Image (tube, rainbow, N blue to C red; front, side, top):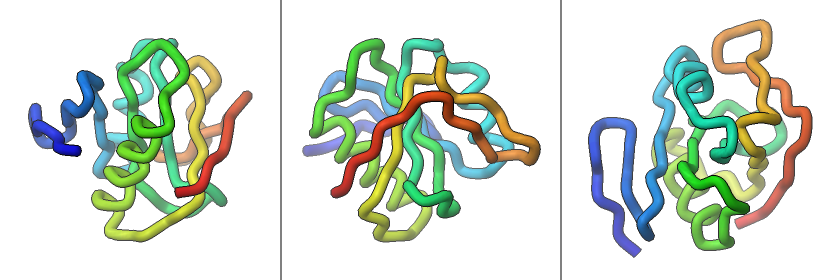
Length: 110
């Protein structure tokens, strides 16, 4: 699978755009700018990681989730296996930049 870099924070793969947050502040900006039907992904277990926005309005496929997880690991320079994802409408900003509160989410492992 290959990705086309659209700009410093966006990639196009499988006809889906993935946006990657590179800092706590940028992560929040991505969430605020995203359509409420899009999906958000982060490393599970409250580990520090990039936030990924998957620009689709239907449940992500296993391959889309795997690609988002790989982008998250690449940006974070990690090899996390546990991830959490949710529709943006279920993601609220926390008290500190980069923190979020999830109203409803799902988990998966690479």
